[in-house]
Amino acid sequence: TGYITSSLGRETTALLKVDLETGETIEEIFSNDKCNVGGVTLDKDTKEVRAITYNYARTERVFFDKELEKDYEFLKANAPIPDAEVGVVSRTLDETKWVISYYQSDGPTSYYVYDKSPGRNDNEKETSTPSLTPLFVSNPKLLPYKFAPMEDVRITARDGLELVGYLTRAVEKGSGTSPLILLVHGGPWARDSWGFRAQCQWFANRGYATLQVNYRGSTGYGKTFLHKGDKQWGVGDMQHDLTDAVQWAIDEGIADKDNICIYGGSYGGYACLAGLTFTPDLYKCGVDIVGPSNIKTLLDSVPPYWAPLRNGMLKKIGDVDNDPEFNEKISPLFHVDKIKAPLLIGHGANDPRVKQAEADQIAFSMHEKGIPVEYVLYPDEGHGFARPENRIDFNGRVEQFLAKHLGGRAEEMVEVEGSTARFPLLEGSSNGDTSSE
Image 1: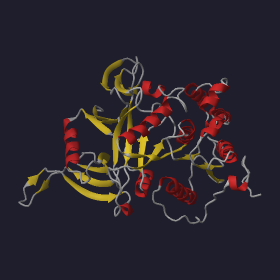
Image 2: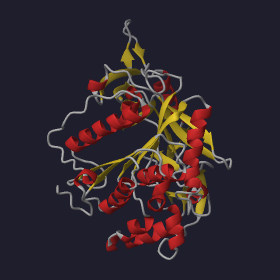
Image 3: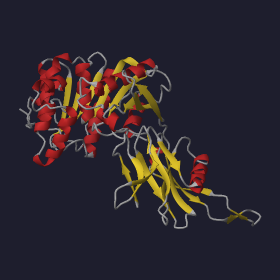
Image 4: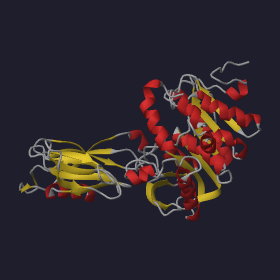
């Protein structure tokens, strides 16, 4: 017999005990109707299941071992950091000493030794009271600073579907209304999760609330939730979920309805372009990082060794190969005239996934039509920015852009030594030629 996780014949992945010779399921150990099974803790000797984790919005555990459950209850009750999530890094063979982590959304991760071995009290009597001894924190340079906690929230889409979101409020605004950045995750077949996010903390420090939402098509929530995103790009329900999340933030008094930015990379960059194009009155501005503007040209640039991936994308996105009308319907490039809000584009010239042409074509089209757009190209970057000099440079430009359009704080922009930033719109060139004329 053995343990496997499987979604065969079911909505979400479950942990099953199976007969490895026949493939028959002997027992369903655990499943959750809303999300997939996560980590599994086994007894090192008997291989029996001791605990299972799953993550709908936060990490949760189901225990099959009462002693282990008591350990976690102690660690939770004695946590030096409120609302932190407990993780186990390692244990001694006899399990009397553990290295554990306390993971938080508003500071660095702290590491402790959990000691269950017998000791002696002041009267020299043996005691079995466990102890927690601090080891270190992941980034002590962060300790002097105040960070904003991340809240997990539930948002109801227009068709009644429940969406999990994560809200990081502006530090100075607290529970009040502030400008909002809708930070859209890439993929789109991925998900956001709770925890410390440097980008969210940066925005919070500058005076912006940040909302992340696991729109339909995100992973981890079962087959139906995933496939509700099929053929729903741009003008469909995936984008509607983002629109509904913004409206939720407005209705809850979190977001200033007149100062909202849509921001994202890769698919998140596409969602930014779609948001500015198909809901032009909702957003004050947008930031698109390595996002595609024409789905057909995006898929046409996929290298041959990605052919299986391309076929899967066609099934999920829609047949843009044989249906040009559908491609035009969902591709922001064909609807540039609708854009009203200023756009900042960042792209890497060596991007193998979303070619530079995806940025060139929409940036130059907007520029020619007199629609406000800024376009920064990094010749030595790919699908995202890896070099610290370029990351700092682009973040500085983002700060200036957001401060101009949303009114938050920004540091003075200074030239970053070593950055390779180029400006094709100012240089009057595209299609990979960034030399000055």
